[in-house]
Image 1 (cartoon, rainbow, N blue to C red):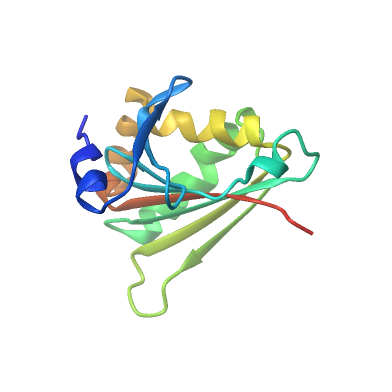
Image 2 (cartoon, rainbow, N blue to C red; image 1 turned 90 degrees about the vertical axis):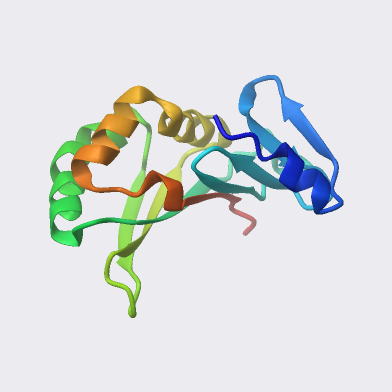
Length: 148
């Protein structure tokens, strides 16, 4: 695992580790979260915890071949999304770089969203990413709390 802690300290932020997610490094001053393979943004405020509002995950990454990746997303991804508790999803492509993909997943709660994003560090996901042409190093993941 790449440890981004040094980068966080150089940016003047305070870094701490969440015992439940030891592979993540939180930057206290901004709420940004870093992990090997890309940056994860954490935008869930303290007052939202325990709330019945939904949580969205926005994942951005490049793919080697959009058509091949999309075929896998539409076939193999169905079971993964169902098992992971995804209640809505949508795929977007960048207008200028058609291999830059943004994926929106909606979850019923924060715990389900965090469990789902935890699978991105698994060997199974990395194998699937290799097979479907996802550039894991390019991944940017944001978890967003519904506010209204």
